[in-house]
Image (cartoon, rainbow, N blue to C red):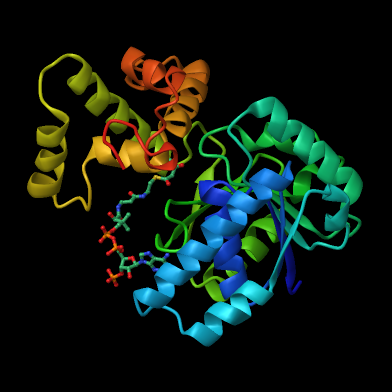
Amino acid sequence: MSIQRSAVIGSGLMGAGIAEVLAKAGQDVIVSEVSAEASAAGRDRIEKSLAKAVAKGKLSADDRDQAWSRLRFTTDTGDLADRQLVIEAASENEDIKKSIFAELDSVVTDSDAILASNTSSMPIIRFAQATSRPDRVLGVHFFNPAPVQPLVEIVSSVVTADAVRQTMTDFVAEVLGKTPIQAGDRPGFIVNALLIPYLCSAIRMLESGFATKEDIDAGMVGGCAHPMGPIALADLVGLDTCLFAAESMYAETGDPAVKPPVLLSRMVDAGLLGVKSGRGFYDH
Ligand code: CAA
């Protein structure tokens, strides 16, 4: 199966980045959003990131124009009927995601199409079960910023067809030029199973007054050669996304390491979501 027509549901931080990656790889991409305002914000995000790629010398102006011309924006899911691949990157809410998968199931006509979720930590099988084709549903998890980070987790549920897993793995490696790794449908897959306990632990350290955010971050940058420290990384990922991931992993595992720190919940209650809202633990 040669995938040429793809779509992304949602154009927030991750959806916009994934749409950009697909368009740069030559895909005909539709970006679907819930409202004209959300769609305009998504367009703006992609346009700015493409401009940054050109400014950083990662993309020629011609390639930017080509990529931009391959993107279409819609607020009507019905426009996705002819898609061969749809990647859902809506907000981390299980009910919203399930209803999106049910809708995609009724809209996407090609029975060979692949329906994927970019969820950070939710069980893929629950989205698969919202469709009449659970074997064609899997997780395709990108990392923020998607145009920069090379990794993609391919997450097979217990019923994902092996041919679907293989098609996506080849697509990610050969068409998108990224590095696929295979993960089981367990809480947090591979990366977030390790990352979320780390971020929660850093926030608890800050909450306890044990160290400043600057020193926690400097510790991991200077001591362990991470490109950024955990508090800055939580801001980059989005504090709402960190909270949803921790909540969903805690609900399934009861592991105290992913019990959401109260400070994280309070930041989200306050609308302080990190880079995406202009203020989180740091000002952006
Ligand atoms: N398009 C293409 N390339 C871009 C770009 C864009 N829009 N923006 C930046 N780049 C390139 C730059 O050209 C640069 O490349 P070189 O290293 O070859 O010069 C590189 O990306 C770094 O960019 P910057 O110089 O602008 O920024 P930086 O050096 O401060 O790095 C960062 C920023 C990439 C975010 C880096 O700090 C980093 O990698 N941080 C860690 C991010 C991380 O861990 N992400 C995973 C989060 S977890 C997640 O997403 C999953 C989840 O489910 C929670």
